[in-house]
Length: 193
Image (tube, rainbow, N blue to C red):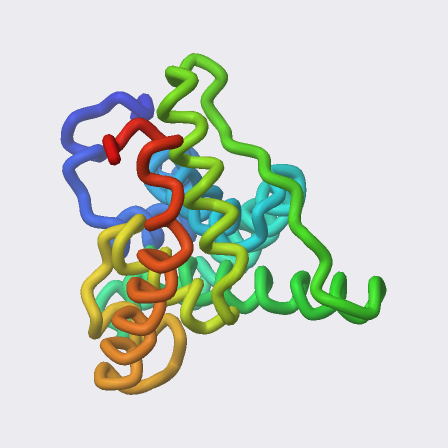
């Protein structure tokens, strides 16, 4: 079946994983189209470096494909949730390695994707990325998953392997810290003053 087959495209991620495990390349293409952009956004926001994020997203997708043979459609995890957990773990590992290599919390380069975006939007995204980079790792993960990836608190709890109450606490503290970091920049970012 071609990747643009509407019947195949209508299947949920779990069904596509099972089909991929059975050798269906079109299922893999559809699932990659759904999940890779989300994995890349998640990694980019956490790492603040597009090249590092691409490496993490690719490694996470490779791990997903390796897990396909054992995937159960009725299993406890959805492919997207499983992938976000892997991205979260790989990103945190990279952050820790880079901090050990440098010996301190280095400023992360600010690379906002999307050259066609307006200058104001690019400045806003750069400010958000810089503010996100100041958050502790767990807060950053929770805020990115909740407010950028749109995941529910129970899904985030599963990804981060913590309780829902901890997710709520992390996102609340993260939002307060982001607000404080961005409040002084409202006028410069085109939000009036």
